[in-house]
Length: 99
Image: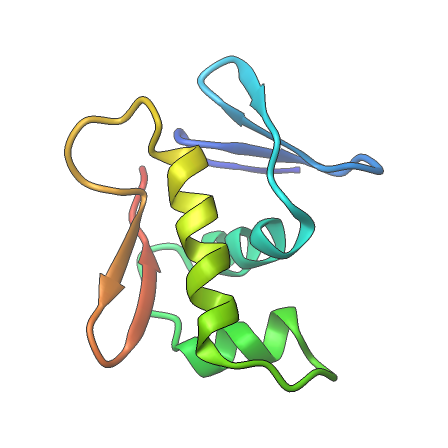
């Protein structure tokens, strides 16, 4: 199980993400992205690294990543005020910043 104060990931057939104490439904690709970002929490992860980890044998454009990232932010940041759990670092990638 992977945890941070913002979310908790559980290894179950249909992964659950918990924000506070309530389960939040997140698609499998978005969840894979979240796992990559949490594993490298605090560090910038390039778009290319995320795409290689989440879509290893598939050619996808950055548009797919953008859509998944937007869905992830919508779910994770729903009750947060201010900054997102995921920062966009222009020209470099993304960073998971929740403590």
